[in-house]
Length: 139
Ligand code: AMP
Ligand code: ZN
Image: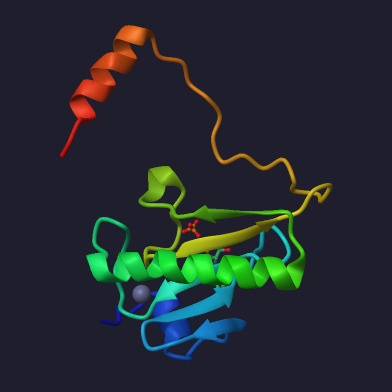
């Protein structure tokens, strides 16, 4: 439910102020305090879960529906040219707050951060690619 010492639980509980742009029973959506671009926001499920590995299926589905709705709304209001959804899990992947959140990042042509890419590319041989895909095949 709520985890002590979780900054997002405190924001959801109103103990720490935030710039809220949307709220319903299941989610609060706030502006990121250290935005990558104008309007960078975070979808926070109100029930504390650490990350994607822990999120209930129903909440996971609702996150994407809400992300779509807000991407459309924010694009209309901000006149951005594109949009990233970003969601980090565990420290190695860049997660710094261990309460699930989906980043909503409007992108603007010609803006300071218009060339951010969240990863660079690695090369694998065709054999390795085939091994990887074999190991990952699932129903
Ligand atoms: P991540 O690196 O995916 O865990 O993202 C955590 C995000 O939370 C970062 O982009 C931070 O700027 C943001 N953040 C941390 N503290 C606050 C806060 N008090 N209010 C709004 N955003 C925050
Ligand atoms: Zn929390």
